[in-house]
Image (tube, one colour):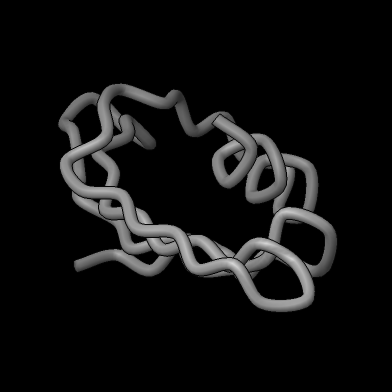
Length: 64
């Protein structure tokens, strides 16, 4: 999962992708994505919102 990899690279974390709950895409000049995922950052899974563009900057996952 690219959002988790980007987060790990920017924060030196070891978040592990678990599953996707919801995904939406919108085609404009690029491809905008919005996903609700579950990932493990500690021993328990947390739910995160990931928003970004596939060809541009990806924001860090937000804990929901």
